[in-house]
Image (tube, rainbow, N blue to C red; front, side):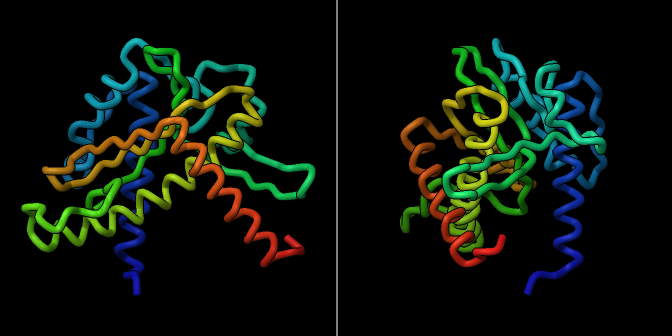
Length: 213
């Protein structure tokens, strides 16, 4: 069973990281507390590198995109939605970051903070790491898969609402583990398409189980 105190601390940490990224992208100075410093180390450099030669389109809400202002609520939160008129299936959510890179590709990214690393695949049995790290990497695979579905959901909603074409999705993970301080996972068109297919299967199953939703 998850410790409520641990869950609350993780949620608070995640909120701080999200707010700090938004502040940094808007040119504000970010000074982390000692508690959050390990999670912030390396993040500004990663953002600078990813955005070099490109531009931000959305950071929690539209970024210098007045035509998208209608997607910001009275609470200041940016929300996008997806609705399929044929099936009546739909959902809404708040994505973290949409940016155009130096190759003019539009990328949808999601920020995660974690006590352990994420991973794109299960660790090789011969990997020279301690058992605790190996278990964390195994757990990280499932975290990555879950986030990829979340990104697929946001991609479809962002394209429907904002009229853009997202080419790649990306997970940016910050941890306090030095060996995995800031991780970046980028997924190309073929993988994104598979993720989207998987996501809409999840949506279909949800409505089959909840026909009155």
